[in-house]
Length: 305
Length: 254
Image 1 (cartoon, rainbow over the protein chains, first blue to last red):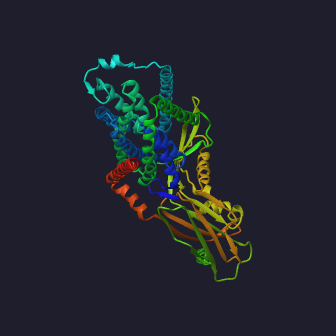
Image 2 (cartoon, helix red, strand yellow; image 1 turned 135 degrees about the vertical axis):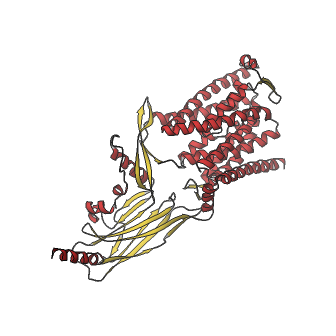
Image 3 (cartoon, rainbow over the protein chains, first blue to last red; image 1 turned 120 degrees about the vertical axis):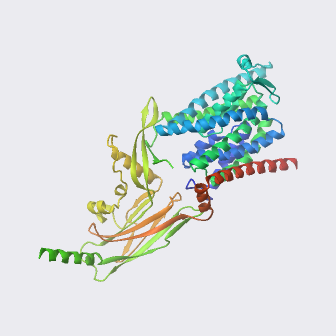
């Protein structure tokens, strides 16, 4: 069934979009990532203009994250206090990110920088997570429980301490604020929710328990992506609501299934899977940059509307 | 005397030009882009009206072209730098139609001479203009060629030789396929009658390509009330997320 998208001005198969939405939704529910870093490139592949793909994806992430966070609320695995602190940072970062994005756009190299950002961040985070979680898996097999908090030293030395009851932490608000700002900047530049950066940052940097991390990151993502959607809708007019609805029908159902799967799988295995996934996407993007493209030329709208 | 001859010639010209005229029919003069729009096929047919008998000499040939609205396009070329492929040079092509289809009744070079092509801008190469292109960039022509290559690949540009059927040098018909990803606007259908590579008559008409219904409503809203449009998108997203979550919980509880 072909559907014509009013803003993207292309005709696509509706079932293809349901399928994509569902697949990415399952991952979103399992890992607490918005799925934007997978969906945005996939939308490019099926011929949606990049500007529309990025803006619409932000809108769709709102839906799948909302659906996911409700499930986490019921299981009481959302740290609202930590989420709010991250959110304050995130909104600041997103606003900053838009400024940076427009600056890069004026240099005319925005595509390349976005892709390089993807390769660098996905590569670093994927590798770190993979090594960490494989080690953790080995240890848990040997029977030794590892309860280490490596960054306890300098994080605990910072002022403005706050008690995060749900996470069982008593730390300064500065590290979560910085994480929030950083993720906000990246999410505005890369057109993603930023969960794939935030989840590892919360686990390894802030030392939050894995079970709480997913729900809390979803909670923060909802607001940051909603903010991004509004920015895109009012400045670039690139949010395609028909595309968003088609994606989120599949996405919200997928997110529910994903949350159930995530709750039944051991945390370490979940992390190995997420790391492998991140590395696969990174590899694909790196290949695109390294191999000679079949078409050296590309077309873009002049004046950028 | 010279002046008189000149005046006579002027009088003769329109008479000669009007010797063979196009009477045109279109299967549809508007294309409505609805929610399930999946491309369109327009049948273009017509007859040649003439007061005099069919002239001697080369046979009558017909060219039909459909042109979409033109927009400037930026063409970028990738180059290998530091081991990765990055955009380096770019050129702005001033006018490149968003859609261009040409159908002819015989091989293109036989139907239209180069000078006539230059004058009427019929072939795809002529329809694209890059006046004021930056000549410092090496191979500026390759950029225009790239626009054609990419759009031909997307099915937006096409030249279809021998697809106009001409009967008895009087009746002609062809069909032009339009893909699903059309740009909105006034499309121009142009019909040329040629003899021996020269244009003897020309006819133009417009085909209106418009979004209708929900498509039109959403598009207008996104442009005119962007804040409400954005909020509506968010409300839909949150409602869908909540709906799915609730539905799943109810399903599991049962």
